[in-house]
Length: 157
Image (tube, rainbow, N blue to C red; front, side):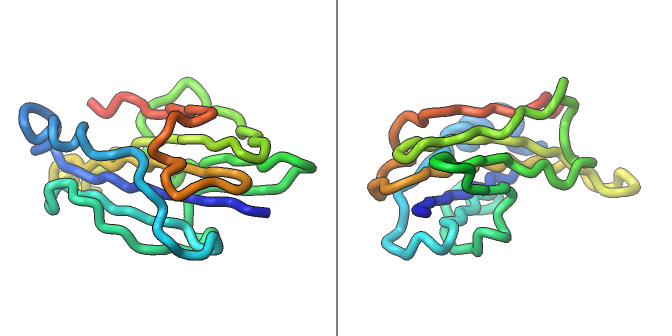
């Protein structure tokens, strides 16, 4: 089973909620070219406010990525795991799993917000973007339009 996974984690604080800083955050890419590595690893990219949202790529094992991947006949079942649940903004209900045919791919986005337990520190936020392709694809697949888009982003106030 040929699966390509890219996880982009964008994080910021209240300083990037408006103006020029928010424009830089919103300009951060949601898909990048895949590195020339075996497809047994996920392409993990961190983009943080403290680094001016510059991509910092690395690798993670599939089990470390917040998605469930399961073969179902000729399809790949994909479901983003919403963890930790206490950091999720309100949503009406979770989106069901997506089933991909070979050659298809999904872009799944979830956002989160946190504050310290005592409320001493301000809010922090992050956006998880999971780009998952099933079957043989080229390195630039995540620069194109996805077959399926799942936007589970809720209000972060």
